[in-house]
Amino acid sequence: MAGGAKLATSPQEVAADCDVLITIVSDPPALEGVLWGGSASGQGSGALGFLRPGSIYIDSSTVSPVLARKIAPVEEIASQLGSDVPFFLMGGTALGVGRGTELYPLTDVAEEEILVVSPGLHVATGAAYEALGRGLTFSGSSSSISSFQGFARALSEKRRASLASALSENDFEKVVFRQHPKLKTILGKLSKHGAARMTGSGSAIFGIYCSGEERERAQTELERDRAFRGCAMMPAKMVSRRSYQRLWRRQLREYLDPQDDPGDDLWPPRSRYAR
Image (cartoon, rainbow, N blue to C red):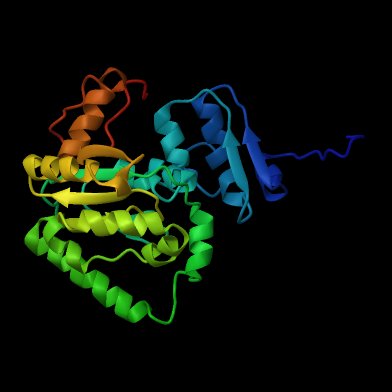
């Protein structure tokens, strides 16, 4: 107390008077008692109900993943890690809203072939946004939304990204290409072989092809072009949501609940360590 600590008589009192709340308790029932006053149905009567807006909660107790997810859903944790992270819990074709953390699944497109070209340039995302000079809303937002809606409809109707690509747009291309003209050159040459775009704020450029043979022909020709000297070329393929989830289960097989049926709709799959 001499060092400035305060004595509290309840978890609620601690939560109401702190910016960071840390719990380290013995077991799940004890944690539920601290957070919810004894049970999840009593939410609001425990410490969580008294945290101030903007406060941070950290738990270092040894509890099951089930209880951890009850405290903070995995999607919420993912959105805090980064704007792209929630998408990797879903996979497939999806519409991202806001920062991209609010996702809506769309009809999957064909698993077309891709060629990713990386010139080894570094483009800082923060600097790219600053150069764009735009917030989440701007004067041209109405026309941009209309264009995007047209692209989304084309994706659903044509079911091929290569066919809908003509309606797509990456706002970062204009500002990033001014800083790195080589990227504009690479995109122009890739576009001669089919649909092509820059990835996010850069610096990779990718092309989309209807078949592996078409991609190989394009790669062979591009490798002879001096503009691609020093560039890494990486063949890849689009992955549907079903294929993505199948890959997820295969890679994490040893950590999944053996009773989990790969054919059911539960996603993400259950951990074998959940209690």
